[in-house]
Amino acid sequence: MSTTDAVAFWDGVYAARPTAGDPRPNARLTETVTGLPPGDALDLGCGNGGDALWLAGQGWQVTAVDISAVAVERLAALARSHGLSDHVTTVRHDVHTSFPPGAFDLICAHYLHTPYELDRATVLRSAAHALRPDGRLLVVDHGSTAPWSWNQDPDTRYPSPREVAADIDLAPETWTLERADTPRRIATGPGGQTAEVTDHVLLIRRTT
Image 1 (cartoon, rainbow, N blue to C red):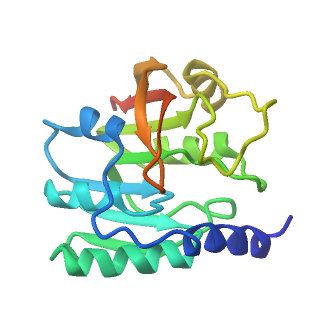
Image 2: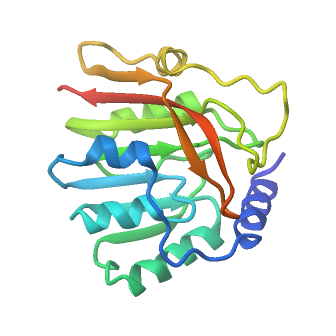
Image 3: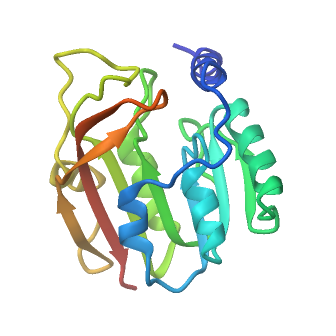
C-alpha cells in the first residue's frame, strides 16, 4: 500500500466528517498537561484539531501534523477563527517516511493507528529523542473498538501500554515511565453517539 493510498484514505475519512467548529481535546491530554508550564508541543496526527487548539489556548506553541491535507487545512482555518494562529503551525507530514524536525517539551500521539504501513515503534522512539530534558511523550491508544471506529475487525488486538513501551525500547537512564494504564471513559463519536471505551495510556518523561 502506497503513501498515496494512505493520503487518499485519510483525506476521505476527514472529508466525510463535518467540520467541527469547536473540537474538544482528548481527555487524557487535558488531565496530563493541566498544570504543566507551557512550552513547545508537537501533535502527531492532529486530526480534527481539538488537542492543538486546547494546547494553544493554554499558551503552548503547537506544531500540528497530519498525513491528511483536509485535516491540517481545517485546523489552520480553525486556529485563525479562534485567534490562535500565532500559536498553531499546521504541517501535512507523513511520519511513515520522516519525523518532523525540532525539539519539544511535549509530544502527544493520540490514536496513531492506521490500516497502512507504519513502524510505530520507530516513530515513537524518534518522538522520545525529540524531547527536551523534562519533556513528556504522551501516547494514547485505543484499548477497545468504538462503534464509530474505522476499524471494526473483531480480531483486532490492542497492545498494552507496557508492550508499547517495550517496543520503543528506551534507555531507563534517560527516559522514565511515568504512567502505563488502561482507564475507561464514556466517549462521544463524530455523530454524537456515546459509548464506553478503554484507553491505553503511556506517559514517558525525558530526564536528561
